[in-house]
Amino acid sequence: MARKLKLSVDHDVCVGNAMCVTIATKAFVLNDERQGTPADPDGDTEELILEAAENCPVAAISVVDADTGEQIFP
Ligand code: SF4
Image (cartoon, rainbow, N blue to C red; front, side):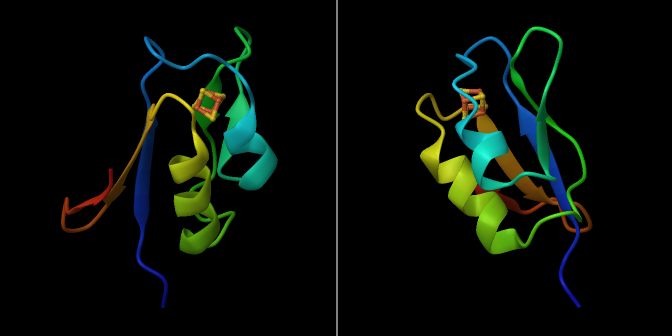
């Protein structure tokens, strides 16, 4: 079974280029300020979520194991 992930986006640095929502279409959505925001962490595979995090141009995305608290990205 896939591990549970906890996603967060630092809105102080997000520039709203929508890369995350393009790659992981369920895990991230754009909020009213057009910034990436965590949505459904179970909606995409871990691989896609990590790809989204890696492709964020300002490294605004953090991914943590929801059960153990282990930092997965960055
Ligand atoms: S990829 Fe990064 S900068 Fe772009 S919308 Fe998502 S969190 Fe914001």
